[in-house]
Structure formats: structure tokens, C-alpha cells
Length: 278
Image (tube, rainbow, N blue to C red):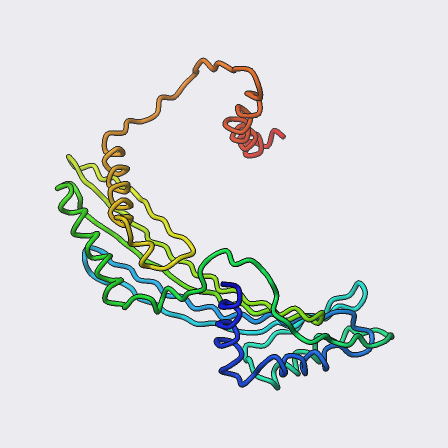
């Protein structure tokens, strides 16, 4: 899995720019001049998308891509940084020269040959955006709208949104470490507004994780989010105002004073500040 992530990171970040491990080592040759103790290159490619459906109609759809490379040089207690939105050989060399401008007198540190790191993969190396077609994603949102309206006649408005993205990271260090990481992230949000006897209330639920849309939509998860949002909204319809005034407080053993301070004390401190009585 780790090797797969590194290969995908190289294909996404280096290959389009005509770069390879040899090109990175040439960058280190510029970065690690006299007085520079350590250097590294941090590449990142971020891809995002979002969809929102309100009352069964697609209200918004967005897609964005950002990428760049950061260069760091360390000389004793000083650190130099440089950044480029463009990822190609000339931009890397220019950023390396800028970062190493902090160099002090001293000997040059030779860069080691880059080898694959052995980091542990924490999630699958995949791109959720490409894993499912746009029509299928929107249909899931519209399905939840129909599901909620059929579940209770008091439902007046349904807002469902879906977001996904993937961060591709590649790190090369002057001590020879070359590592990559693929970080997928998806989330589904459901908000429902209900009305009864002229009173309107809302409920919200959602969830996600670092996996694919298919896993997010599996095992009835979207419907579970929708049911929870509806449950909250219906509970709110029956809610009554919280009582006010003087109340008896019973403190048990342990740390009850801390809990009381956090629950009440900060509000009282705010009152003192507002009244100018600190």
C-alpha cells in the first residue's frame, strides 16, 4: 500500500512536469550548498469537489485543483523557505536558490540518493472523485430528498450536500528519504426542516471518512443520516423552553467543582467583564 501511494504520488506530481528522482537529486545539488545542513522538498496536489441539492434541485456544484512545491533549507538555527505554484525543473531550482539564501560559512553537505520510505499507510490510496460518476453522486442526494419527504408529511425543506477530495503528498529529503501519501476524504451532510402548527424546526446529521464514495454510501448510511436528521427535527418540535431561576445543585465526589466552573463560571466571568467589575 505504501509503495502504491508513492507511485501514484510520483505519477501525479512529477510525471506531468517531466521530473523524476534524478531531477530531485539535481535540485538538492543546488539547495545543499556551503553552510546548509539539511533540506527537503514538499509537493502537494489538492483536488476538491462539492455538490448540494435543495428540495430535489441541484443548487451548486464545484470543482477545484491546487498544487505546488515548498522547499526548505536549514542552516544551524536558521531556516529558509521558498514556494512555487509551478512544478517543473526550473521552478524547483529557483526555489532552491531562494531557500538557501540563509546559508552561512561552512562546508557543503552532500545529498544522499533517494530511496523509498517505509511509512505505514493509514488509508487506501484512491481518488474518490474519479471513483463514481457525477450523475450517480447527484442521484444519491435526490434519493435522500425523496426518502425524507416520504418519511413524514411535516417535512418542508431538505438540504443535502456531498463533498469529496484527495490530497497527494510527496516528500523528498536530503538524507535520502522519498515518501508519498494519498489522503482521500468524503462527507455527506443532511439538513431537514419540519413544520407543525406554524412552528418550524430543523435537524442535522452527517458523516464521512477517508475512504471512497462507495463505502460512504454502503450499508444504508445515507438513509441513516437522513433518519437522524429527521429525528432531531421532530424532537425539536416538541421541545419546551428550559426553566430559569434559582435551582438546587447537588455536587458529588470527584471533580464537581471543575465541572460547575466550566458549565457556569465562564458565563459569570463574562458578565463581570461586560459590567466592568473585574
